[in-house]
Amino acid sequence: MTTQLSAKERADLRIAVKAIANEWATAKAHNAGAGDMIKEVAKKAGITPKQLRKIATRYYKQSHESEVAEQEDVNSLYEDLMLENNQ
Image 1 (cartoon, rainbow, N blue to C red):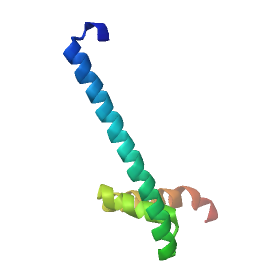
Image 2 (cartoon, one colour; image 1 turned 30 degrees about the vertical axis):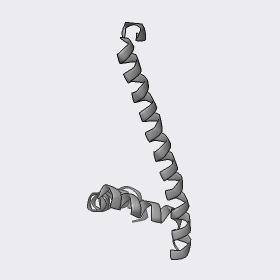
Image 3 (tube, rainbow, N blue to C red; image 1 turned 180 degrees about the vertical axis):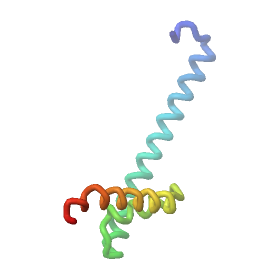
């Protein structure tokens, strides 16, 4: 496939591949830093890293309302299905 590309197209493709790899490396470094920050802040706040990560994810995705509604639906279904035997 690359043999059908011109020399300029091959050079442009190499540049794009390197740029993508650099972006991935940057993202990986940021994620590692965020992981360290999550552990440190969670410990200081007296919550688990899992809880802090979920809060940060909801904030990032701006998905709090939809996740609350979804959880309410799941809770309702669970109660209807699983707690029925206790009655």
